[in-house]
Image 1 (cartoon, rainbow, N blue to C red):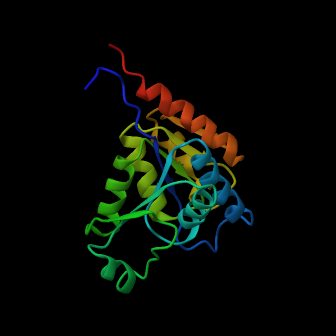
Image 2: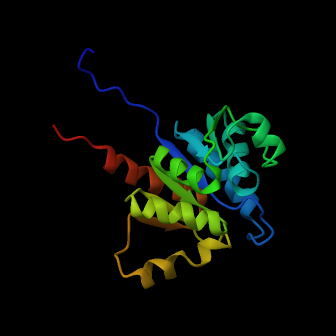
Image 3: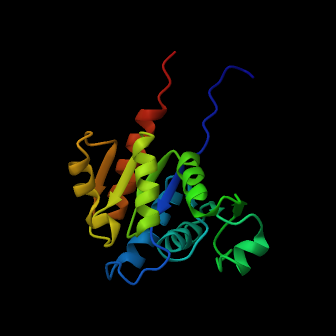
Length: 190
């Protein structure tokens, strides 16, 4: 090595519901903007290799020329498609964890430099709490519906401090805020 710092691309996880019937009416549009903004900021979008909100964000990232990585609960592409009924669309790479949903969620959040939470359900809350416990930078898309409607209450009632969380209803501003948190976390003091 020549002593120069090599900067790797930031990996931003987009967490949200695969089934989106309870999401806000503009959740599709906002998810795509999240993905687009992640790509425009030269970051990699990471998700659970699933449908719904995470896939919408991947569509936005791919349409903006970005790179996407999915972590699947399945142990193979065959199991991913046939048993879990999950897509392979809009993913540049899918990592087949073989750990089911809860194991995948742990690896997914640990893989990322930050987690952005959109409209979600139980799995999204699980990913949120793992990231929170790990002290990861977290962005919450206010007004997206589902789990985003209860996150502030969870933080308040947990009585453990505010966490490393930023909130915004504008997906572009949210990505900017999350990347600011990531850059602060990544500063290496010599």
